[in-house]
Image (cartoon, rainbow, N blue to C red; front, side):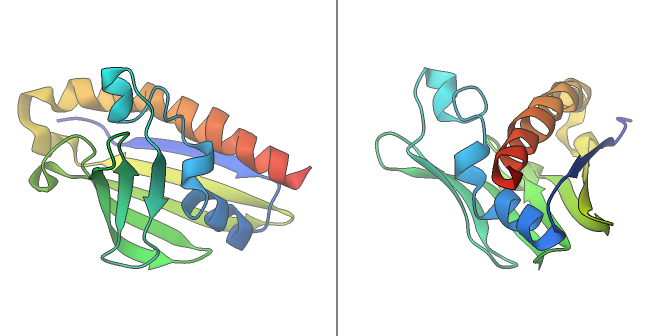
Length: 153
């Protein structure tokens, strides 16, 4: 049984702005050079987009113009919560559960990311979980956090 991943970050923004930067500007801060499907073949995607609604998709546009879904949004509450079935690079039937909550704490927003459901991946679940555990430090902490700091400045 794999553990769930939980990461917390505080950003100097109100929660609606923090949510919008996380979702609507995902393609601006996501480290696509290392964390994308195109990167696995030494290329860079042309875009990463979020369709802003429950049932919407998070999609990567590959250099040849084709698209690949990363996730399906299961809960879309602007300024509060984003929950997705996360399956980047896998079949949607192998989705893990990713939730990002945005909570006001005075003049900052606490962003809590929880990633769970790795047991569904069978024998590769523990290795995948370990990879995401360190990957989220970069993606959430360094990339998204840095994007928020630039916006707040």
